[in-house]
Amino acid sequence: MKRWKGLIVLTLFSFTLGITTVAANEMGIDDFSKTKVGDFPLWWSTYPFQGGKVKQVYKMKEEDGKRFISAFDNKDISLPIYKDFPWDLQKYPVLKWRWRATTLPKGAAENSRATNDSACGVYVPFGKTSGVALKYVWSSTLAVGNVWEKDPKEFFVIVKSSGAAKLNQWQEVSVNVLEEFKKHFGKNPSKNPSAVGIMTDGNAMHSASGCDYGDFRISGE
Image (cartoon, rainbow, N blue to C red; front, side, top):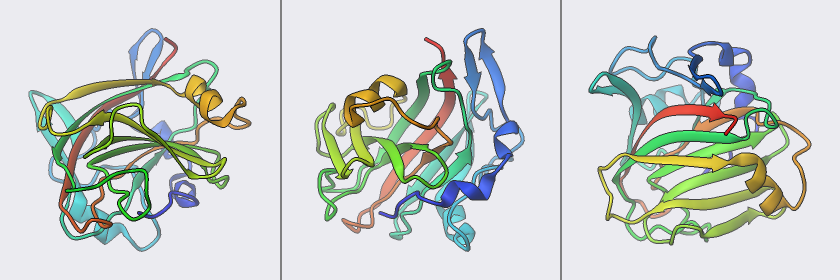
């Protein structure tokens, strides 16, 4: 699995596109309304020169009038995509989304670099080049609540969903990013979040991996 560091500079200023107000104290990150079904999501980016690869993994789909990013990787592509989206963490400490694991990478476990694959992964980086980030995953094997400090004092992986019991079922996820940052890093963040990213990967285990993602929003609750 490759790092997100340096990626989000590619999408500077794109956060103004696709944003919607979903409630008085919430803001949508992307409603996908401008992306055609079957296409790669507009205003999302990846590493330089990797656009052709990520377009094989991430595509827009629609069900019951709702659009979402559908990801499936059975070629060990294992690349993240990001939307540049800086936001005021004090005003909007909570990040919410839906995800639905469709294929779990066999034997994967996010507590070792040798097995670190996830059907579903959502990143919150802090600053454009700092390397500091939180990652939330749907794990094949680890229990909900498991935390791995992948890069000391920089990068934490947190299990929010686990196993096959709810495979192919949408799950609502809500995380207080501000409180979790303070919990894991032991201090307040010096920078606000600078993007939201996703990654479906299976390259460590050489196993197919799949997830659907949608309804990304920030909240004051």
